[in-house]
Length: 398
Image (cartoon, rainbow, N blue to C red):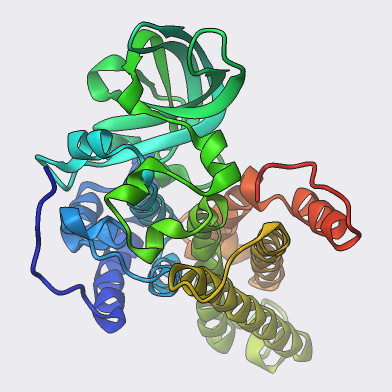
């Protein structure tokens, strides 16, 4: 049963103030978070208490159903402090958006008794599922499940017949915590604190109400959860909405690096130079160029989120061409953010490479973030170019 609420949703200023507090904690404990390969307990507690995970949750469960523009600004702001904190916050909160699309019975199972329940996911179709009476039997191993220590459920991908004799289709299957095993394999160069581990399941029965037929929904933009969550947030095409969580943190990371570079250059005196780095013409032009690049990416992120909000308000639709364009936009935002981080790191000096220095951590995290398949520059630009030339797409990531 849904939980009614009469509390007003927080304003953007309130959300940003909350994000500042959480981000400061993430920055304070960044080294410990990296060493533990999951958020420091104080950061984790603050995140769960902050309400930020509930930004996109259906209002009938006490969520805010905030706009995607506000969501993007909050996650971007978090990214300027610490990227593991921002990534986990953005991922867990976007899950509360797409959880509003699944069957009403599953929504009640997830949030009816405890609206704070968290699930994480892996969209890779690595599962093997077979139809059985009442549902499917699932086995497999899935990777990249960010924020798994927080989760009571996981949603994992498979391509399988929904019922006996049917054609295989793409689906997500929800598993409670007692039906999967966590594999602690998250040893990476970046985003170490995201705890994006793997999970494994063997011969698990998944009843039909826990099966989300995502492939069909992506074709029609019709989902069972829309019947009980009629708000505009849940009418937006799935992939452009979900992918906003992937691109906003990295832009914030670029802005965080920029702030730290300015502070560093103002006082740093490179060895044998006899003058502050701030007086070097090349440092000045590099700072100016990266500032402009980051500002342009920020403007494009705001346009991206505004298009989602216009769709939610019924003022626009996102057809195939629009979705291809948004795929190109988010990939270029990610690429420009990473390129800016590279430029800043190149001129930060060797001292910025020590493990205690935040710039090198931002740099590694942004590299790792940019490897996500839904931000792949070549795939995005090739398909947008095909669309501009009247050719069909060869990717489903739009």
